[in-house]
Image 1 (cartoon, rainbow, N blue to C red):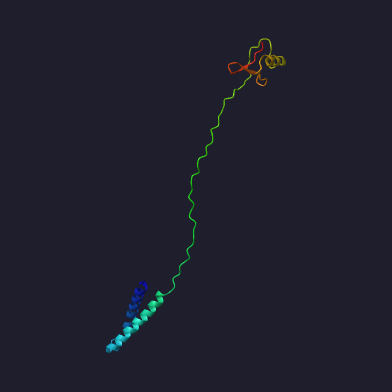
Image 2: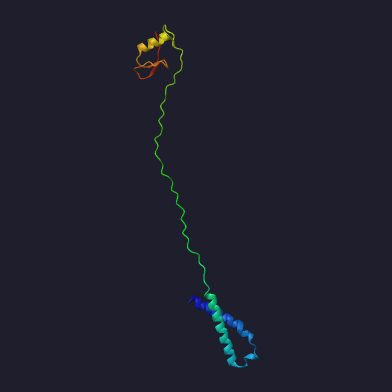
Amino acid sequence: MNKFIKAAVLSVAAATVVLPTFGTAQAGDHDDAWAAGAVGLVTGTLIGGAIASQPRYYSEPVYVDPEPEYYEPRPVYRPRPVYEARPVYRRVAVESYGLEPWTPAWYRYCSQRYRSFDPDSGTFVGYDGRSHFCTAG
């Protein structure tokens, strides 16, 4: 239907272009006017059909990957680190009862007296669970 309308419009346009070329002197006979109109109609139909039947160029459909959707990664459970307060050992001036701390005799006395004696820090673990500095005496 669309091609028919295009052809009709183009034929009318061609007829309007062709008909004014015939002057009034030539159109004395009505048969000539009808013949000129028919020629214009046929010419317009041929030109319109030629224009309407031109091939239309369509590009082939191209597949395009859709953009991937971004998903927020799931949070990973990581246990919170546990920090234990470690005792800080300082050298303390302790009143000794006969033995000077950090001497071989002091080491010997403390290691014999306390089973939990730590010679690196000079402390032992008492019955209360705390570290105590070994005072020989």
